[in-house]
Image (cartoon, rainbow over all chains, first blue to last red; front, side, top):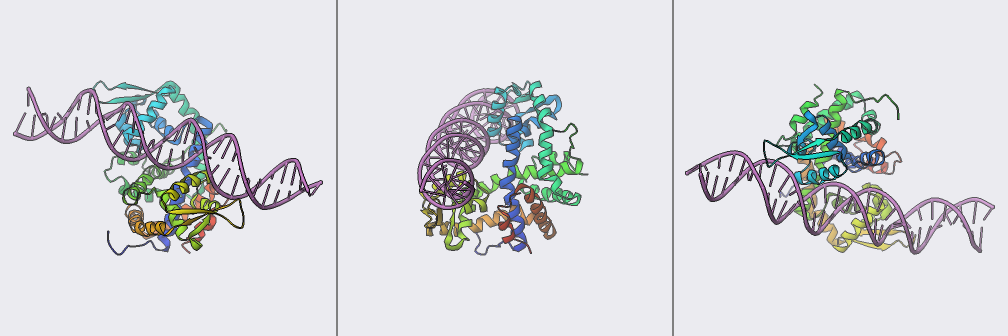
Length: 166
Length: 166
DNA sequence: ACAACTTAGTTGTAGATACAACTATTCCGG
DNA sequence: CCGGAATAGTTGTATCTACAACTAAGTTGT
């Protein structure tokens, strides 16, 4: 609680206001498209997509939580809803009786397959295609830098490297 | 609904995954700090801060909605809560009887004053200070490009220019 | 001058997330 | 090998947001 605050200068404020506006608007756009075309929230989709790329289309709840950036409580509610809809199934992990595995069902896999193109198109339309190739590279580096602060425990670091630009 | 989807290449995916992670994590961090230190959500704070910079600390609901990127319905609920807490007051616009003005009270102004330094410090800690000066400039340009797509009606364009980096 | 339309805002409700409290295992030091 | 701590996950509740329906006031064309 220092007396002299380092306020943002003009350049910094410009960047921050824009990032904040994106934070406010982009999730709504992604949600709206997926809700309309696939009856999924963006987070639902992300959970399903993450499972679809895992070994056996199965992950432990904790691992799924780390990869998607969600708390276990949130994930538990979401997976429960997805299970009710038959997109995912849960079963106790044999190796650790505390743990629960979540597996993508065939119906769930079909849902991901069907909704992926529309989602990719939306991401292109509103983000990637708005940028030059150089800006895409810059954004990647900027994202890395910010995430090192946000995700200081490095719980998700493995994920970024997996999608490393090289 | 074309048959051949243009998937994201390696570089694009790297940038997108990072942006998505920020979208997922940053709002929670901002909310948590303001909730803890000022009993405000980030959006509450943004509403109060926007009013604090307006003429007479007063704005019409519609104008406030545009500047903050919120729908009128959301804003109405939020302002109602802020009014209950005595931070904002509403009164009918004399010029247009359909309209409502929202004005920051003295208590609300004091709340903004008191919470601004902590918020600025958080923004610095997790975003601005993580970046080089060059990256701040790049982020500003990238944000501009994305917002031109997201905010195609340009309802908020005025705001960005106000915070233009020159 | 009046019917149809648009604009401004509120309110009710359902769905999603955060937070805290809780149960059930597993791990670990002495 | 046992008691305390840590880990894994679930569940209840309060809060916040989105969506749709609604009221009220202004605008416009004829």
